[in-house]
Figure (cartoon, helix red, strand yellow):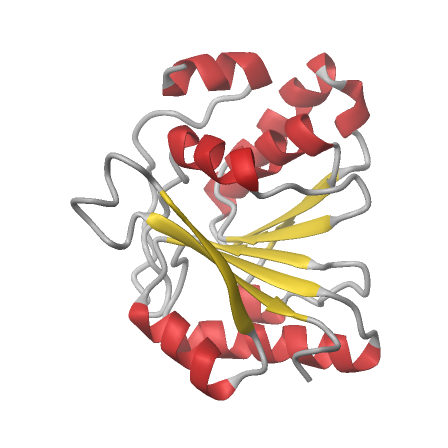
Length: 205
């Protein structure tokens, strides 16, 4: 299916130019993860309805609605841009008109990622290079503090993973690389066209 076809299926609007840009060097321009990439990821990587996924830099909510549609899991979007946040709320209204099961399973928070309070049930965290390594380090520290308070299996999903992110995780945290999902047809031209999945469980500590 084309990008617009997925949007029509979910009854949302996330395709098209992404207006809005933060001038801080720490926050990157928002781009939604392509639907073809999400399709490739979730062909092999499965979620459960009991999972609670946090998408940092969620924009208009594409990942939130796509994950809920596939797995009925809870998904929380964290977005600092007020315009994108309002768009996400509008998409939530449209999505839940068509898929009532999404009510109370999809949430959006408007604010800085490093200030998001990790919920004890949050166990999957998604990043598409939304901010600098300095902010990423703070967010991961918050996740690890949450783990100390409530030990549980945690996983980080990185799309188009930056070398700064992966170096930090592999050399300064107990997270370990679990698997990688490469995007056939584009990975051959760019090694960043992949998902890197890092895990933290009792065996990693």
